[in-house]
Structure formats: C-alpha cells, structure tokens
Image: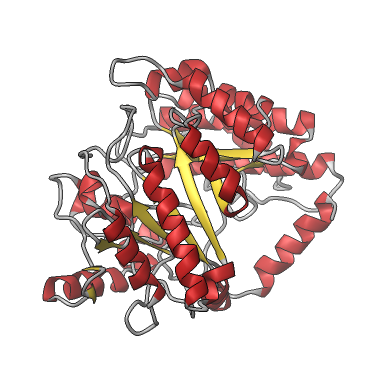
Length: 445
C-alpha cells in the first residue's frame, strides 16, 4: 500500500466510525495490558523519573504465579478490567524500576503463563505478547540474552534512549553521576541486529529542561535506524508559552528533516498524527487515559495489590496521596468498601466530568492527552483534569499543520490538514506572520 492509499484508508476509517462504534471496537478487538511491577529497584537514578518514591521491593515467584492464576480465571463478572471477552489477546508488561534486575523471575513468569494457558486451553494461549522496556544497563547479561533467544518472537523489547549522548547522560545517570548512553546504545544496536529485524523503537520524555534538544535527539535516533519514536511532554506543572515556541520550532526542524529524507513513508514520530488538533463531538465523552474506569490497563505490585495502572502505586504517588488500590489477587477486585468507593469514582470519570468548559469545547481537543493518575496525585481525584500541558498541545497542533500540509504537497495529495487553532491562542506562541503562513499551507486565505 502506498502512502496516499494509506492516508485515504485512515481517513475513511476515522470518518465511518462514530465514537460509540469505535469504543465498542476497542473494547472487543484491542488487546489490553496488565503490568507486573517485578521490582521497584533500579540501577540508574534518572532525574525525571515519575516513580519518585521507589524502594527496593521485589515480587516473588509465588506472588507472580498467583497473579497469573487470578488473571487466567478472570471473567467479565469478577474482572471487568481485563478478561477474554473484552481482550481477545493479552499484553503482559514487565516493569520496574529496572525490570531486567529480575530477569530470572521474568523468565519464570513467562514459562508459567505459557504452560498454564495451554493446560487450561485458554484463549490467550496463542494470543499473547510480553513487553519489556529497559534502561539497557543489564542487556548483555547472559540470562537476558538467553531469554531473548528463547522468546524473542513473543517479546516486545525496547531500550530507552534520550536522543543524544549529551541529553541522555544528563538525565539517565548511575547513582555516582556517570551517564549510561554508551551502554544503552550498544545494547540497542545489538538488539536491532540480532532480534529487532532491522528496526527498533523508543520513547522520549520531554520536559522543560530538555525541550531544546528535541530535534537533535530525534535525528540521532533516526540515524540509529529507529523507526518508531514516541515523544510525549510530561503532564506535570511547569510548561510556559516560551517552552511551547521551542517545541514548535523543534518539531518544524524534525518535519523538514523527515520530508527531505522522505522518512514519513516508513517512520513514525508520535507527535505527528492526522488525528491531532480537531474538535471533538459531544458524543465523544470517553476519558482519554486508560488509568480511569475500566480502561485498557491494570497493574499488580509485589504484594499482589491491584491498581488501575502503575502510576497509582506507592512508588509513584509517594506521600502525596494514598495508593489507589482497587483489589488484590487473593480476594479479587472491589471486595472491600474502600475499594468499591474508588471503583465508583474511577468508573464515573468522563471527558466531560473532568474537563473545564474550555477543555470541553476546545476546537483542537483531539489527541490532547492527560494522565488520570497524575491528576489524582496532584488534586486528590482522577476526575479533575490537569491542564498544564495546554500550551504544548497548541504548539504540537501548529507543527502538525506545517508537517502534514508539507507532506501532502510533496506527495501530490489533494487534501489539507486544517488549522483549527484560534488566532489568539496561536499568537501566544508564534507571531502573526508564522500564523498566516500556516493558514496558507492549510488552504485558509
């Protein structure tokens, strides 16, 4: 399928499915994720880690096995979050801290899951995927290599690299202050050559401290043959319009690089999306984040406690809020009054309930993310949307107007990416000449 055919297909798909139909489709057809926090411990001390209250806890095989048994016994009645009816396949995500510090446990749990699903003739026996995101420090441990050799076709594995050596080594450091870039890149390139089929992906977290490095970081990853780069701005407080201008300028540089090299044909940069920056219908009332209500995820810690997602755990909320425990693997979900209250609160969260009127009627609302767990940590409830990211979303939308219309021009595609950003919002970030230039690109004169 060529690029133009793909775009037309995506547009038809987006237009033909109403919000309700897409909700049903997602519930019935997209695999859900359960996170096993195998340890809170980590061999690095990354400066922006959202798990700011980590300890040195470790999950035992007994807890891990019991968690798998509970998961495989799930039904819509006893586990409305993840069960074979609403998740035809399952993704088991092993996370830390640094998950490879518990490599023996991970292999044990993979073997146990595979054996038990076959014994039970469970639908997930041949419909599962394991996921591991690592800092790469322990990648060359022989046990890690053995695991990848045995189960590489069933594991989605990635090593986090923050773009350039300068940026990475300023953020992802050992406890003694040494940077980890060289060992991380060595591991990523080895994985690409031996297990990654020539293409790998990575996630980059953008914060006010590193936003000015966005372009150089992305270009470095592209030169390392990364084909999928998930960029996201932190939801925490601290963004300014000055940061938004920097992001816009950085994304324009990335766009020019992508277009010059025609990398848009086989490379995905998450900041660039055709579904970003449009109005949302009032019927589209779902919460963006899977960490509220019966979303697409669930997490289990070393005690067997169950959470809507990892960021509701003690390692993330610390002393700011009580952990959002909704059950445990021995008694199930919602067996205690406090858990029932939390579930009722989570299930009541909608886009409308958590949004201000400005958010609800926002003309560029689509693809504007939020983290319900961060809202809980910040405000004491997941039903109060944090909007600190607002200027960064505006900058992202403006960059998408530039990127997609340039791509359409280059590919001779007779369509436009409309600019829905109100002028007064745009002028808080860019000047009037730049705004007019974007409007011309999008066909607004």
